Image (tube, rainbow, N blue to C red; front, side, top):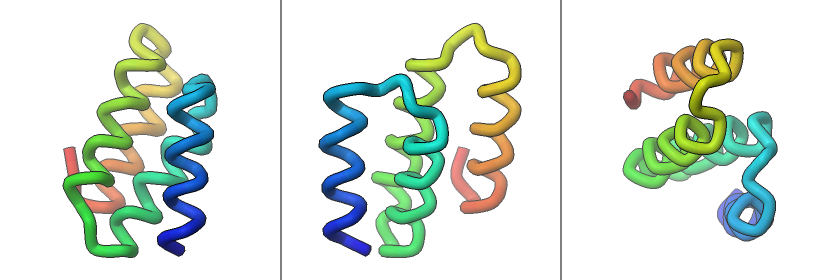
Length: 69
């Protein structure tokens, strides 16, 4: 999972307009026990998709799922 998370992080840093990718990344970091990185991924998603109400709902749901706001 670590390698997948690292590759996904690199891809999202280069092209951040992938909401599903950010949500997958947050879940992966959570599974790996790094909730700080999980919260950072969710914050990056919030910043990238600011003003998108549907994205905000999905990001909030993911945050609730992993226990990080």
